[in-house]
Length: 358
Ligand code: NAD
Ligand code: DAU
Image (cartoon, rainbow, N blue to C red; front, top):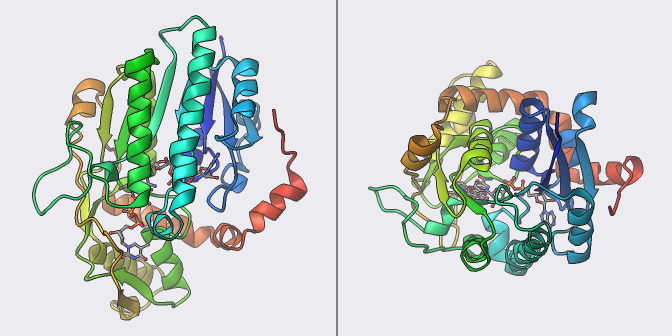
């Protein structure tokens, strides 16, 4: 079997790690080189329990996508058949307090990666089956009112420094496709949830706070709507697009599971009260309405008809079942939660993992 080397950036983060786990088990011919800077959001613990045969097809490189020399060495060494680019600063609230990090990694890092990928692709005589797949967000489209859904042709209208940085990176990726012919793909996905999500995002944060009997912060009046997608459904969609998507195209990915923040928080309270044998309504007493997020987009909803029509993808997990499974995962993984919150796994990395530049 001919092995294909694929560069995964940000593979120690939430979606990247779930994707690596899925890909290693579904595609025995892929050898994945996982380049991750291990920021607060990246943890090798997310990949620590890979089976032996899969470990051999996963090579971790501790490094930064802004490091062009490192990237060039990796492209030379592995002659990648494709790149799947997850690495980013991903949290909207952090982008409001520290926007520069989002410009640096999401815009600057993506441009460095594009430049090195283009040079390597030219050197390899422009193989047309090469793919540069940029993993992006529905937040680039801005906010919806009560009706409608984002399509691939919805104009960009980002509200936060995070979404502005992702919009800029999408534009650069598209420009490298149009200007230089690099075979690029972009996916714009809605809110993910599931195992290994850092407990700063709504669902794991609320689970963690309910367990600690801490306040559950709901921004504004809790009426903002997100279109929730189980992370493994996202990973399946990414695999389909990477392998079968048409170069130059954009695909929207969404769960068709719209919920307000308040609905999500109440549902998590209900599930955990039931798991802990507490009377219904116990945890709802922790709900605390707090000052709204500045520039808070009111509603996201995805029209995923293109990916369904062209590639046959649709979500397989129902929201209610997958949310319960997610709660159960966090209940069983308290050690992981404490480790990522305290930064313990980064110390663990320094002590136990050989960090390789290349
Ligand atoms: P995450 O924050 O959990 O993980 C990001 C990973 O990127 C981490 O492992 C981090 O260490 C790494 N990283 C950050 N800066 C880096 C740099 N300069 N060089 C190398 N590695 C770096 O994010 P996530 O939620 O897994 O999101 C992954 C991608 O998917 C992002 O591009 C994000 O914009 C996009 N996305 C996320 C969602 C969602 O709901 N989480 C939805 C749609 C799209
Ligand atoms: O839509 C895709 C995006 O989803 C991704 O591109 C981002 O990387 C990802 O972080 C996510 O962004 P959101 O801002 O939508 O997710 P977050 O979990 O931060 O918030 C979800 C909703 O819950 C949002 O309306 C804000 C609200 N919220 C969030 C937090 C953390 C609260 O009310 N309280 C909170 O404490």
